[in-house]
Length: 229
Image 1: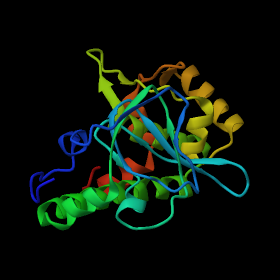
Image 2: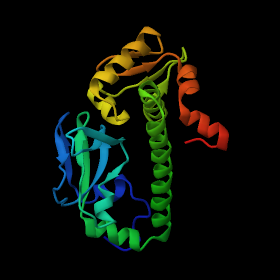
Image 3: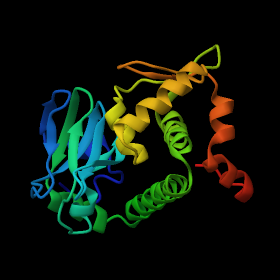
Image 4: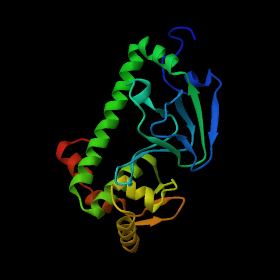
């Protein structure tokens, strides 16, 4: 690769190495403690990033969508990989050698700035959600998680419903909200009875977005600081 050929860390950079891999839903792309061999670019599908706590409980930190690359903590931070990367759906990834990615970043200050900006925006979102998870009750935690998922993955229907087309089980939602599966199931059941949302194995439909926003402390924080994410 010629120096400065690429100025964005996108599909065009990864595709030049002609390394495409497909994973089935539920298949593990990378395991905790496993030394990554390359950097991944998510072309198609969704990938769940999680770890298993000492208690044995899964904690989901993020769900990646197409256009994401990972594991950047290892690639740029040179830190061991402590996380599991699981295909949430059928997935296609491109891979690139770590040294080529580092070469690209080191030779392109604008790209480095864009990566840094993206990292800090993501970190801000994580901090706000963490604040909600630390201060709210079970219902509030789940509502805040649903709000974040809706903003990131939801599509507005003509009737005003917000549809999140992800195969999110009660177990995965529990791991996002730091709740037990049983508590999550009870909270979801109550929200469905209130007709706030509709839940099935393929999608979540938020029928009363305004109510979700009114109950989430994330929105309250945003209003107090005049910020959104």
